[in-house]
Image 1 (tube, rainbow, N blue to C red):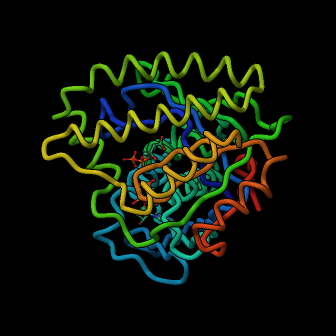
Image 2: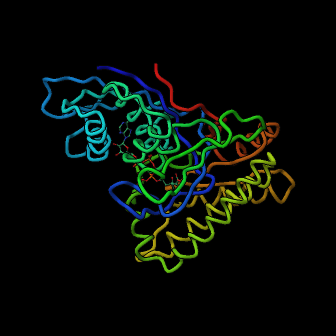
Length: 322
Ligand SMILES: Nc1ncnc2c1ncn2[C@@H]1O[C@H](COP(=O)(O)OP(=O)(O)OP(=O)(O)O)[C@@H](O)[C@H]1O
Ligand SMILES: C[C@@](O)(CCOP(=O)(O)OP(=O)(O)O)CC(=O)O
């Protein structure tokens, strides 16, 4: 009747940018991410037979029923799979640095799927939890698992799930988030990717590029080659952001500080310090590197950006019950 789960956010190293089915959230391509240790969501789902609709509070604030579409999609699937009609009281806390603009939907929907499935008595394999989380938000598909995770595009609902490639990292891949701007974004990832699929003349090329990036990334991970991982992630991110510029109307998630951070990292690379950048659907820049270089990179980034805005993240675990 009641369950609490914790799930961590993730950063995509090969991006998911486009759906082929909006209802089931089936992606156009595979994607691959690193689950992040410091950023997570705790969610409790408690069935309450007296409720006439699901109720959700996030960080102590009641969410307006009109803004619960994604949550309802997950909860309705749980009700259908468990053949139960009751609604639930959902209480959630996001443990991410204050309004950091770090993918809260990935951890949110992975935690909701896990807590909801358990509260309704479903005993789901993690692969099916991943399919359930996918209905809330694509990136949540991957947050069921820890470490490096691949989301298979699949050919239907059954075959589109995430799978861990390396749950416990045995090499030094690490990330620093540069929080250049933490206000809400103007173009949601959902809307942004839909516009891109519909209007970018480059979308066909993106799908081909992701196939190549995925196989190169899997090989780089197998070799534990952080420089290759970083390089492929950086190129893949740039290509995703080139897609947004090529949409009609074109748009970008970058702001001036995003470009400033990219130039800084380019300069560090040119000076022989191995670090690489990637950006999701927002202006914040995530730097990938080998953890043995952490203090040097933190120091160089701290010369330009406020050290309070630099957050170190290593690989995080998969979903757990509390
Ligand atoms: N703990 C939570 N439980 C349920 N829903 C949540 C929770 N936290 C955030 N959400 C929902 O997730 C959505 C926010 O995700 P959104 O995709 O806009 O941004 P994001 O996840 O920070 O970035 P990204 O585009 O990279 O995924 C909102 O609809 C919000 O209501
Ligand atoms: C740039 C991304 O972070 C986009 C994530 O998009 P979402 O998972 O937030 O989108 P919806 O499926 O519409 O909820 C890339 C990624 O995480 O792979």
